Amino acid sequence: MRWIKDLSQIHNLNLSACGLNDRGLEPILSMRHLKTLDLSYCVRLTDIGIKKLSGMRNLQAINLRGIPKLTQAGIRWIERHNLTIMR
Image 1 (spheres, rainbow, N blue to C red):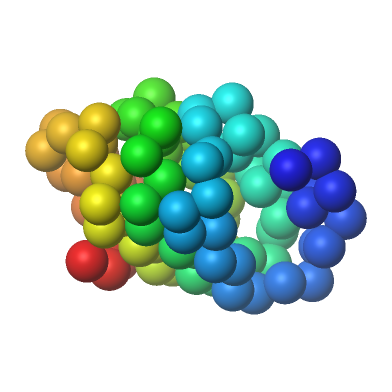
Image 2: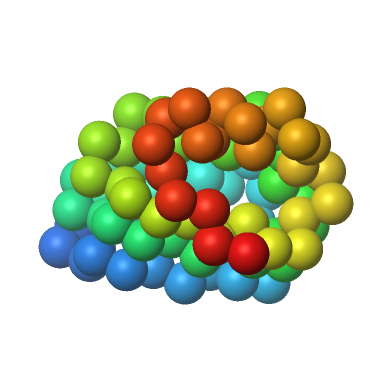
């Protein structure tokens, strides 16, 4: 995942079912132009990791389908930050 931060002009990123964990989200945070992010079926993610996305000002939509450790509280947190949740 370290190389992904070099893809700074990407607007849409699909990382579905890639085994990503909370710590693996760190390189994505520097992707300033990212608008949509698909994290579906990244079953190792938790509310803690998802909350790290709050600093991504251009992020508009996120796919969180099939993430069993994501709680309703985590989903409500995302909705309060004006992110569209694709399910």
